[in-house]
Amino acid sequence: MTHADEPSATGNDTQAAILNDVLARFAATPDPRLRDIMLGLITSLHRFVCDNKVTWTEWEGAMAFLAKAASVTGPGRNEFIALSDSIGISMQVLAASQPKPPGATIPTLIGPFFIEDAPVFARGANIANGASGEPLYVSGRVIDTGGKPVADAVVNVWQSDDRGLYDVQDDFDPANMWGRGRIRCDAQGRYAFWSVMPTAYPAPMDAALGDFIHATTNKWWRPAHLHFAIQTQSADPLVTHIFVKGSAYIDEDVAFGVRPALIADFVAHAPGIAPDGTKVATPFRSLDYDFVLTRAGK
Ligand SMILES: [Fe+2]
Image (cartoon, protein in one colour):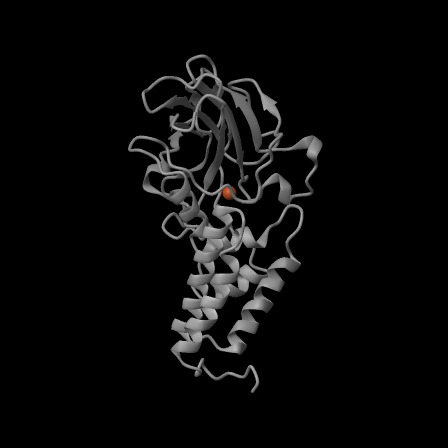
């Protein structure tokens, strides 16, 4: 008998016996968390194969798909994270592992372009460093759910320019990053910076993710957003996005990262005086957003 395309015709007893054999072997896994996860994953996967009568051709196709994802994964690109994002599993992991009480800012996936040691700027400085786009002034506070400032917070922000590109996608020079920076909050938890408006951009469609999206939903854009990682020792750190209200693709984010509470008004202004007193000769935008952190893990 070969692994041809017959559905599993060997009967439920055999299917159950195969699963039981496998579970019995992995039940001896020493680490209890790893054991629970492996037993749960194996059980779900065996049931998925049985319930859907997965054929050998389909399974080989799945292996080839993963191999294609691996072939483009390396420094600066992780196709597996993109795939995880594209079926909402990244967001589900965050919701399951970082539940937030009402009023706290909810997390969103980190995405592929985060850099830990982004340039450090003074509060109110311009992080654009040549990034093109309409000027944008961002300010607000980092506070806890009781309204107290998170005074040791550092706001790490990164974003696309008006072409929809990040610095790491455009002849990246680690000594000359643009559209990203770290800003330390003051004693009241206030942060502020100047930058440019971010723009919607497509997910990379030249490999496994592209094959998958074209065969299924045909939706591969991310609406315009700023990425934030709020780094602190005194509260629970937070990674999230703030999405531009009214952006193209706001209702069909390929990564399922949009949540209503994370959509904000990037207020349009005529040329004039910005909220920090800066004279701006062109139209510009401003965003006022408070991040609310929990201290449950501290
Ligand atoms: Fe992004």
